[in-house]
Image (cartoon, rainbow, N blue to C red; front, side, top):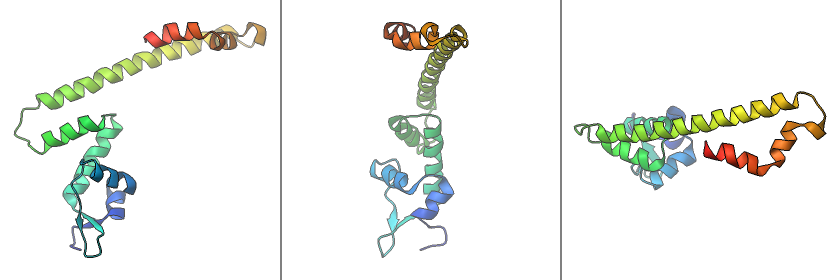
Length: 144
């Protein structure tokens, strides 16, 4: 093992990516196949750790595996224009904005439920009434 090589456990610790996830990324081709020791143990170098950190950060931002795969291929050819990377990021931003709108609608509905119940009796409880009325819930929240 060379000085700049890391066993999978050390690669996991340094990159913040769990060992099974590193194996999975290798299996699906996000991470190149690791070199091996004579004892068949995986070895990772600094470039692999950087790639794992890139993947981890992209996953934290909610990018799907296919988008990450494309972003990695773009990173591997830095002379390309960044239009494709911009398009991927813009698509993710639209998804996030839709999710925020949906969460705001959810928050508003929960606030209405809580305000209308206001420590009354269960027979008049807006929380129970709203949850029992599935047509009401599907109408407003499903559209958001």
